[in-house]
Image 1: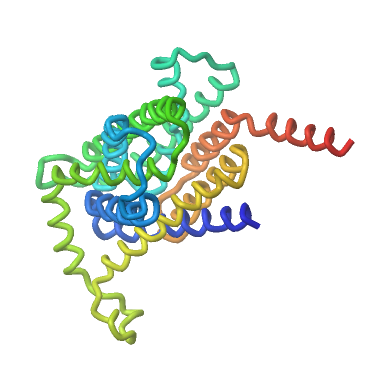
Image 2 (image 1 turned 90 degrees about the horizontal axis):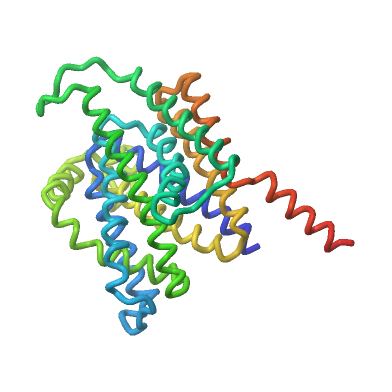
Length: 330
């Protein structure tokens, strides 16, 4: 039942998080700094109370070893959320981030000198082509608008968003390698890492302080939700603050459920669950929010997710698992 409930809460938390995220970026596309800051401060407070027992529990991994990881993690999260302010749609954002295996493979070759099978390279080729197809399909739907107040055309702004997502993709892959080396040296302490990474990243938000302050004012000026007009105490709460609260809580549920899932299930099960969750989030975003999604998008999506499953060698691992089960029964 532990594994079943963990899987259930992964779907509830992660999929509902996408809903609140899209509700926010539809109205305020450039609210990434405030969104990321709210998520970080919530996890930092929760970790201080639960993980460190109000600071009484000593950390296993030295603080100095976290600093490089903190810098990478901060940049990845801020740039990923920042991309929404550059004409990047939610479906394209999901698909592009699904191409993380490409970056991981290249980083593994360049940094660790690893070698991979032909199947791995084939899967990465499929993911790359799928991402390119979706990227160009999204470019076709950009409005032919005049230059904005800063002199950038719609297409130029979109290209800047793609560059930001690409940077975040490779930075995330490099962060994964560094984290792998860190855990090899000190052992796995995911909850401690979750707390210190988020907490030590908080000073970095001073860089984006003006954007955070600006969007706090924008959120406060948003109209309340009509559906809550009859409820005392909520009738006059700006809807964007409610959406942000929903995003922060569901983000925490998503992250904590994934951590719990890794302790309850095999890596194969975790990968399958997260891949399926990402696909369902994509489909929901397309249908409910009516994002443009053509046949080319579907082709690219199919190639990305098929390539992901091929990279993870799902079929072979499933056969091996079934073979082991048969041996045990015999």
